[in-house]
Length: 108
Image 1 (cartoon, rainbow, N blue to C red):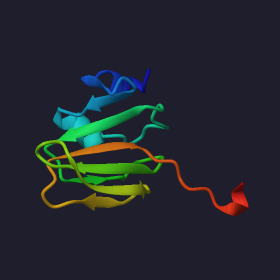
Image 2: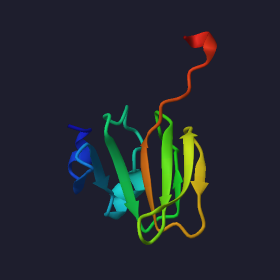
Image 3: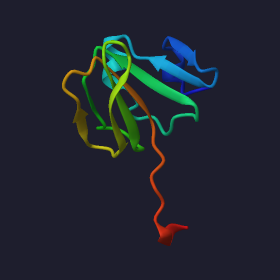
Image 4: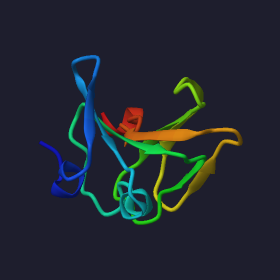
């Protein structure tokens, strides 16, 4: 089960193991993942009709997949940290999911 704000969104199971929440309303698109403490493993947020995202208000880094009109991945941004804006010209949708930051040798 995910954060309550996400649980109110429409969702689909993909590949039998990933739950994709769909941010279809203006409010859910605007808020995205902002303010959430974490995303449960195996979950993502799809934002249709979108070619850019911001990470203002985010508490964790995210991976961003930019999709074309056929929902094929056309670009990927890894470990987008809070307080950033990323975009891809021509994208028709975006998928966001929590990123695992690479660990440095000193932190192991």
